[in-house]
Image (cartoon, rainbow over all chains, first blue to last red; front, side, top):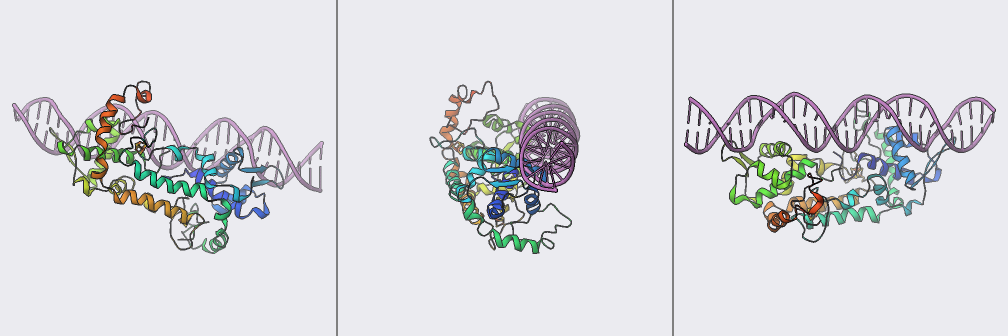
Length: 167
Length: 167
DNA sequence: TGCAATTGGGATTAATAGGTCTTAATTACT
DNA sequence: AGTAATTAAGACCTATTAATCCCAATTGCA
Ligand code: SF4
Ligand code: SF4
């Protein structure tokens, strides 16, 4: 099960970080992004269209087309992307699944959950793509060398290890 | 989309809190629990079997049967329940969906995510059912009076407002 | 103008999670 | 023993999400 973000949203975050990191040569082809991040082409396609509709990306068709961030990465927050793809559920939903959330008459876990949620919201509201893409560089290189031996990508070609160097 | 916990896990947490609150008259019938919490009977049935298999509940068949917590509520942590139903995904999964997580060579969001996760883990590891069931009492009463007018349960009978009094 | 390279969008399929129903097994009481 | 009450378990259906496929629309360039 996805955790916090839907699969599409995970893809969107990854792709946005990728665009931020490579903004010097934008626009970038969908093909390159999906290949680099091991995201199914058509799935990412939908997600990118969605981000574009929400004004976070600019898309150009035809030759020399591709996708680019619509604003400087320092002006795009993680919450912008999450909100565009997953809506406001993450921001409003009760952790126990009840219809609404509030501070009056909190349920047994509400105070704990509020604290945890604050921490999540801090992550989403106070980090921009520029900061976060800083240390992406060395990773991409590392990954190239890891691809063949890490995570058994040959027998399991769908493993996505791109940004991830822990394994 | 569920958030943090699967639906079954949400049900399990609700049911466990309910059992903790009413432990003076255990065992309690599945029927009562599912009715009180507006959880589909057979769905909760599966979930309770699962908790029983994991040693968190004791189940008695036949007349005067029902479910009871296997230990004193103060000795059951939220994480026990989450772990039994959802496994360790929540505890190990990367928020961006990559296969493994680690602190060496963290990806762009890893540090932020670690902080948020700590806060969630604190909620799951340091709160026991006894503490949390304390203020459940007044809520259950409140709910009885709210049922008819709150959340339009007549036209939408599946709304579960039991523990929730915010709306 | 015509062609090739792209994104856009709809239809379709596959996978997963959630929910319903039926029946079996077990227990307690008479 | 017999019966009713209750959990256990599995088959089945439904809804949601994820993934795939196909073709249309747009753009740049020869
Ligand atoms: S008070 Fe409790 S039940 Fe209500 S929304 Fe907050 S966490 Fe959920
Ligand atoms: S380092 Fe980043 S990519 Fe790797 S597991 Fe942690 S959050 Fe996920």
